[in-house]
Amino acid sequence: MIRSMISVISIAVVIVIGTLFWRPHSHSIELTATAMPPLAQLHAMAGVEKLRAQEIDDQSLVYPTPTK
Image (cartoon, rainbow, N blue to C red; front, side, top):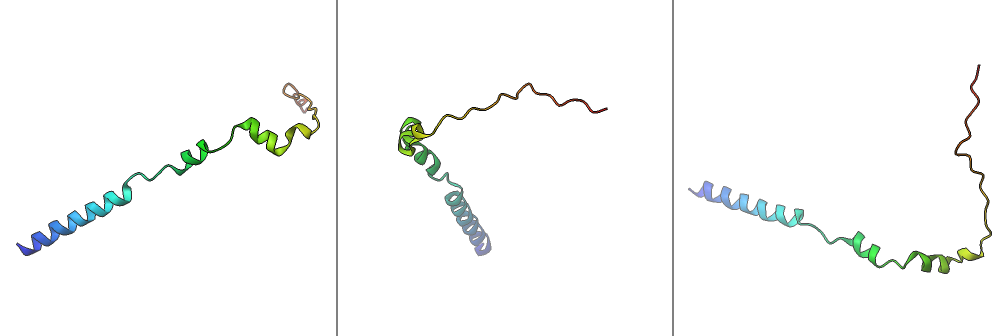
């Protein structure tokens, strides 16, 4: 009888500890994402408008010549 009570209590303790560790934690990523300033404000803080415009060649339809 004592062994069964000890095993029941130990199983209950394991279940309680398991639920404490497996409980969902606070979503710190969501909290930091909501605290971010808007993108336009980040650009203004970084001084992006001071950068000169860069021209990039569109090479999306450039295919290599087949080798013979």
